[in-house]
Image (cartoon, rainbow over all chains, first blue to last red; front, side, top):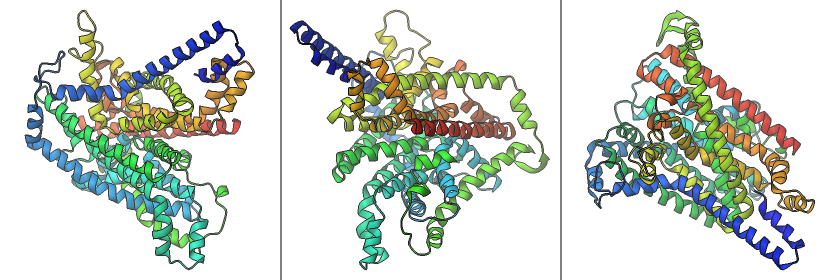
Length: 304
Length: 297
């Protein structure tokens, strides 16, 4: 792994054969890195490529070699009423969950980073707990609680539980950003006669805007993609992941699943890619990296 | 939970010097009221109700009296240790596979990728943001009897590729690789590259350098990755449902089947509570290890 550094040892070698050996070793090194990265990329995106290929394949059987080009699965997918409803439901849920999470998450971030009070550790723990606990457990607990309270399962129950699981993530992202810039700036602005609202608009918002954007995108995609919570708190309706789940074992549906998965995945890739690029243009390169890495590190917990 | 402060990057009291605005506690109460209340109602309370269900005789009827029989059932049913062992084996193997890939990948991103660093980071994030259910399903297409592997490999179709432990481990490893790589990447970011140069000058080979510099300094990241990846893998049921078979029946599936399939809330919630306790315990241990290692470094 530390070969790059080892190459520095080549400096000591002066004869031509030695130099050639070093060059050769460097080339071998570079190629083994490339091969390694190619395998990683293949594992990450290969499945998606396969889905895209099969979505245009003129056969409902998932088998190589491919048979011919068709777009009939796309037509079928868009005409399937259950599927259309499932996608609409996922959009409704995500469009409500994401803004709710932004508001709740930002409030919690401010409360936890800008104030000091007794019990802050406990509240921090409470806010962070949904990020560490597996969704399976949260989903089961929610199912039982709704039953106990005689609340019928519906999109509303999905929205409530998803919001609870996702807003701590916004808190984490925004809190990291709030912690990064000094509170002194806010205090200076107040000393210079700014109102609270002006401080919020001119000092705080510009600082946390990239974090809010990132948090919003992630909250939306998690909500849209979430299967675990929906599986336990959904009534008779379906969301997109639940529909996929129930369709993958049905041989008649696989071609349609391929087509719609392609559409959704490509849309997600385009949106996230451009959003993250935009983020990068708003901050510097290192800022973007730390934001993405930080976001993901926390995001990771939310998957549990 | 201690690990949470770490993940949330909530500043500790010590870092948090300086002047506070007037009436801090009151302001905090106003700001935190909505999120905390919602967490109590929709998160804490349901967990307590779940615990209650696990000790009620005939859940969900809470007036039927209390009993510990559900726990005895969970602990004495010979099926459970078997499933627990399968889950442990699968999760541990997948974790090992991911560490073997994530360590060099993170190393490459931090020290060698240069302008490709952001691209690789974005790719990892993107791959993770694709709908998990769809990703898992795609592996079904690849590994199936008529899938791409069997098409490429000459000879009679290989059946153990899909609906097997192999498929579950492979799919888990590709699903969670982002969460293994990124914390390790973040930890390696803090390593001074000159350390490796110094080690080379002193005659250390790459293996020695990895063992004495890279791994110890990346250790906090490795432990964070284990909290973030190992615990969810232990409760994963989506992967094994779609690409797994009879030999890869995991704890998450067991719990889901008990509760949604058989409607056995007592045993189901007792088992879930044990999983919950284990998750908390594991994350505390990993968090402690991460802390200890940081101090050593």
